[in-house]
Length: 158
Image (cartoon, rainbow, N blue to C red; front, side):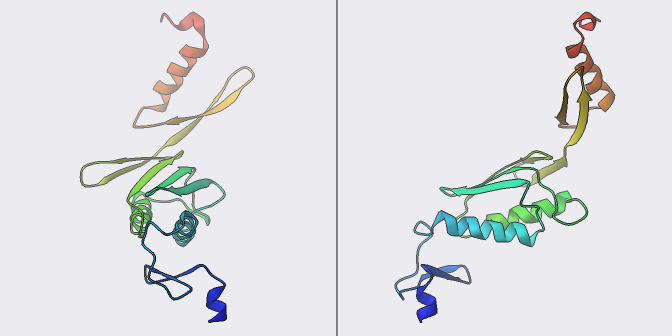
């Protein structure tokens, strides 16, 4: 029992019990730090590179932002990302997900998720270079022409 007292609470099969033997904690009484730890466990289980993504649990919402890359070789597939999001949604106090990764476009339809990979285009100017993320199925040639028109004021009229 001494070892159990070191922890404020113990989680067993989705129910959080207090270390002092009291009544189970409700989801409102669970610490956001405990939920953040569970979110981290889910992300590690799905091989997410934690150095490129930020996450936080506030209220009843899990927020994910940053770049969503695998920790190991390879890339995520839309089906794998959907499984990851379903696993996060299954956590006890989580009611909402706010997901805004830099390299994926994730939107929800009435009954499903629409997950698409965003493409990066490197644009170089006279003294600058920047990454531009392209949503949708625009042709790279058209996007580059639009960027060139913005950079060159003489060609705006053509």
